[in-house]
Amino acid sequence: MWSFRHWRRRRILARSAVSKGEWRRAEESLPLLESLTDDERHRLREWATLFLHEKSLEGVQGLTIDGDAARRIALQACLPILHLDFDWLRGWTSVVIYPDAFVVDHEEMDSAGVVHRVREARSGESWDRGPLIISAADVDAGRQRDAYNVILHEIAHKLDALNGVADGFPPLHGDMQPEAWTRAFTRAFEDINQRLDAGQETLLDPYAAEAPEEFFAVATETFFEVPERLAEAYPDVFEQLARFYRVWSLKRS
Ligand SMILES: [Zn+2]
Image (cartoon, rainbow, N blue to C red; front, side, top):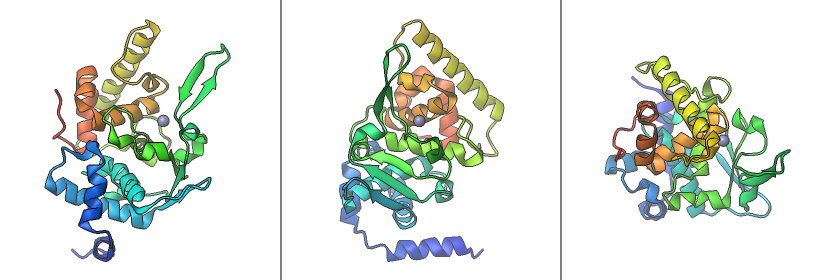
């Protein structure tokens, strides 16, 4: 069946001026992508090409984003939707990149005088239809497999917000069971909070305990960066994310 969307995408892809060498250079700088198959790599390049066409990348405070940086952003932003569809990134167009990390990775002191690391874009509305806000440091974060990747984190919030507000419950596929999702995430969220209350170490970044939507975003980072750690900590959550992202190839151990 002829589809305008499909035709339009083909045309954008055909007109892309990015060479294979340029894609390869961007991919090789991101160990996160090492385990992709050739087919997956090909598809990720297509999504990233559409991303660069549809989204505007704006450096602020004097920061300029060169082609390499833009491609690294696009590849990381499209990784979560690799096995979904580009349409999952609908509803927002701009990516704002600050030179410095503190805008999205700053410290705040609470009423008890305790300093917390906060890695949110400052405004809550940026989760809905507003820009994706990251820092230049985040663009390179995919260079280490350390379960920390703000691009993946913010994209998870975007996917989560597709069915309303970001609340840790994104639109699930028809073959998924909402009860299974809720059960897995509720148990894991309670577990990490209990561990932190008891002063124990946690396998996931403690930031996951902030709120259900943060748990989902942090779990997403861990799922793509160090899947075996998520599978060890919360196998049911791993299973749900594998179903949601339709990724079955990640290592569980
Ligand atoms: Zn967050």
